[in-house]
Length: 179
Length: 138
Image 1 (tube, rainbow over the protein chains, first blue to last red):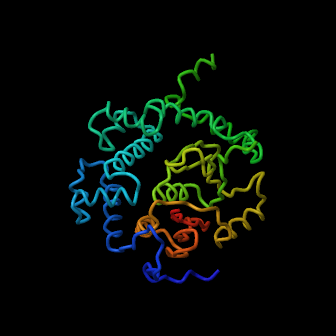
Image 2: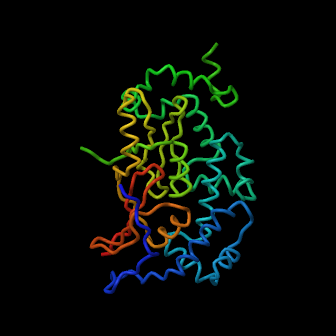
Image 3: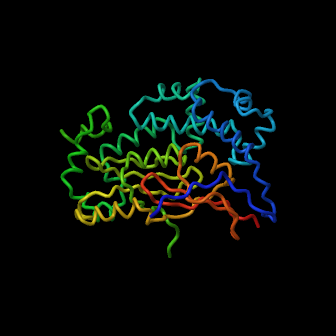
C-alpha cells in the first residue's frame, strides 16, 4: 500500500454543514486539546481549574462550557478520572493503596477511596487483590474457549508463569493449600 | 437468544506497544492483564464509557493458532493495513482528532462530513484501522 498522502490540516467542509453541529473553529479546538493534555501530564500536581483555563487562554467559565461540550465531562470530573486511572496502573504494578493515592495527586485517603469506588465500582484494596489474583491464576480470567483454542489451558509455560508469582503477591489463601 | 457482544479480538504485532497505544493515546483503560506465558498476556482494554465490551489485544505468536508461515503472513497483513476492526464514537470528532494527532496518531482520513455524521480514519500502532465518528444528531 502506498504511504498515505499528508492531508492539509483539517479541510473545512463547504456549506451546507450538518444542522446542529457548530462550525469547527480550529484554533479553539487546538487550545482545548492543549488544556486536556495539560491535565493528562500534570494530574499529579495540585493543579486548579484556573491554571488549566489559563494554560489554554480561556476564561474559567467559558472553558468549562467548551470542555464539557467536547468531552462530556467537566475539567474537574476529567481530572479525577485521570487520577483514578493512573492509580489503577500503580496498584496493578504492585504499589500499595496509600502510595498510589498520594502519587496521583489526591491529598486524602478517604476521598481517594470514595472516588475510586464511585468511578470503578470497587475499592482500591479490592482492585489490588484482584490484580494479584490475576497474576496468580491467570486462566481464571480468560474465557475458557479462548484458552483451549490457543493451547493455554494445558500449556506448561502457563502453569510455570502461574507459579512464578512472588509469595508476597500471592493471595492470602494460597499458602494454606500447600500444607 | 443472543444478548450482547462482550469481547472482540484484535491481533497486534506487539502487546506492550499496543497497550501503550490503546491506553495512553486512545484513552482506553486496561480491564484484564493476566500473564499467561513469557510474551503472552490476556490483555483486554475497554472504554470507561462502555465497560461491558472488552477489546482483547492478542499477539500473533506461533503456537496452536498459527504455524510459522501463517504467523509471518498474518503479521505482514496486519502491517499492510488489511484489517479494520470497527467504529469508535466520540462526542466531538474535531476535538478527538486534534488530540490524537497531537499524540502522534496517524490518520488515513481527516474528519469529513458523511451522510451519517462526521468521520475520520486512524491506524493503531500495528496497522489496524478504525473509523472515528461523531454520529449525526437526529
